[in-house]
Length: 197
Image (cartoon, rainbow, N blue to C red; front, side):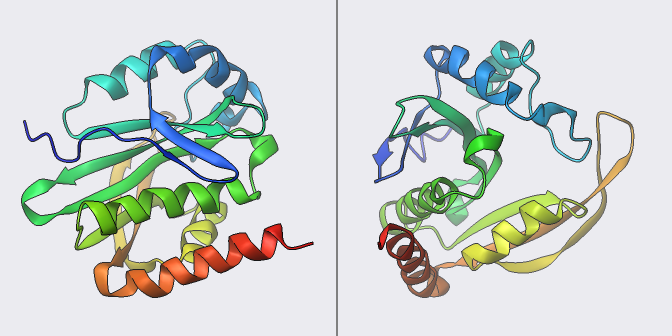
């Protein structure tokens, strides 16, 4: 197993990302109950009762580096994200399996979280591309990915079987290394605009 990428933590103004552990369990159980996100048929958010198993699952996968998303103001974990589908020889990875408690959605937390993860991927890991994937029908997630500056690569039709036995068409997006400087400038501008009085 490759040790690329090695675990890391990063802090911003609104959010920190840190390696996921069972220490985050209580916060994440509370977070997933906010808005009953696990009931959305087109997502794969863990149930409160299934959170411990989901943390263990993410920690056990060789091709995944999981993170807790910690709100700086409260010090509580408000969601999860991962580096996944890691392709070390080609310096590619996906940022995915991301969810946030409902009360922090559409806040600067997602923008800053993605900035921290993308900055590490492109500037420390020297990635050539970073992918994002979501259900074709998850329009909220697709709009959020597009607002980051990612471009649609295509749609993998009948890509996955969902918990309710429907087939998921997966929209695949990416940001490439040459695009990173413009994407970074845009994300930093969004955060500065939010902070402005």
